[in-house]
Amino acid sequence: MRKKRITADWNEVKFKREAGKQIEKCRPGDWEHAKRVARWVKKLAANNPNLHLLIVTAYIHDIGWRDVIQNRRVNLSKSELLELEPRANANSNRFATYFLEAQGFHQSQIEMVLGLIAAADEHKSRSEMEAVIVDADNLSKLTINHLREKYQPESWLEWCKLWKKEYPERIQTVVGKKLYPELLSKLEADTLKELRK
Image 1 (cartoon, rainbow, N blue to C red):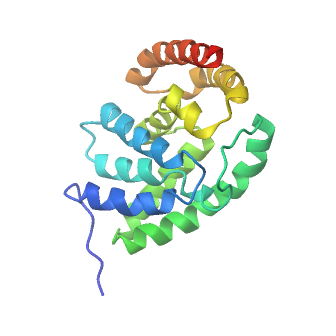
Image 2: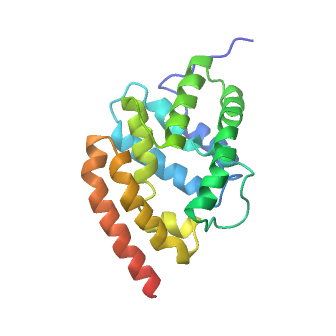
């Protein structure tokens, strides 16, 4: 049976529903994070001819975390996260390929999405599309909701410091560079306010 080629007229609502079933098996908060990444992708790449593949990537970029950590907020130190990341990243190609094939994606599209997932996993971009997904992934974390969903409060300041240190090098899009300082400042203020409660 010949698979149909997914184009810009693909059904995002249907894809999102199916992706959600997969990402709900990942870390707590990953599905909410994925939806924020998709919103950022739409802001950063509204006119990109491959916007649909960027959105696809946004929804499933953390699929490799499926079954790695379950039923608890991560609350990991950076070293613990780095210890688990290779396992999750090694899962990405297999889980994403299987899921995208089941959704009817063509092999060339799957390879493009896998490359974008790898860029998000490595936090490095070598192309405009990779810069969009890396920036969308990073910018989506700069909200108090991300911290609430994924981490225990005692680790929030550690994550804010890490993002303050590492993100200036990671953010590559013009819009991302412009918005990053404002988003980080708001996150720091919101974090301190939440922790004082």
